[in-house]
Length: 331
Ligand code: SD4
Image (cartoon, rainbow, N blue to C red; front, side):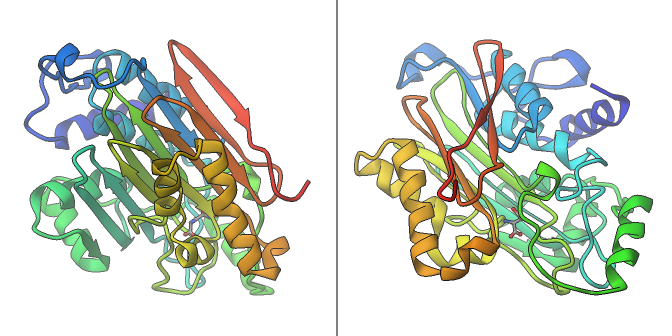
């Protein structure tokens, strides 16, 4: 863990809910749950999975789960790693800006009890998944957008940060020379982070965080903060997250579809495949964009599928942090 990640996680611990107790390494405060054996509804050891090869994110989340963190705390910790990672050009600080040079972030979270929160088109705030959690916990609303979300962040202790790095500025200026807008498939193998976790009590939570499509129109919001599209879960069934071309994920309500298919008995793998098939059969242009899903059911079984090869997911369980290459529709 480098200093930036250390500081980010220390910050997150300072803004997490007052129910958090118990000191843990790096100043983290992990929520301890009562009667864990009584409440456990499956026999799965804790698991954290996430989109792409974000190995440090899955590791941090997985290790938090091993310290008995609740699933929701673990996914916030995990996605925060990428939100603070300046090398990740599609999440948080260091993200690619819109056409006018503004870095705008989208995020959502979903708790085991079905509560959810989201923020969209937020500037100057790095940890937008944690902010989405604050919306869920401290407001009567599901989503805050733009300036309202930013002001809410400051009122809740988040600090103002310039998200546009020198590197991203240079790349944007280069892009302006042609201003050619087209999706970049598997951009540098980094993309939106969507994460799902099962904690020691068998509860499932999820989070999704992104800077959205590179050089999007000002004000554009994708699938990532939309419950049912970028993220959905049902604590009795399982969860799913999507990455790639948000407009396509939105049109097919992909994450909700996957969870509903799992409810009907599909494996996570088959459910992800069906959700990708919906996209490709509805849109003949699918050769020009990527859509990828990962899913996990209540039994801890996982799956992933995508249109184009090059997508992978991470899984942390029992101290093992693995990269799993996703099968794809186009070979
Ligand atoms: C979006 N699905 O905003 C997100 C971002 C992403 O490849 O995953 N980009 O559409």
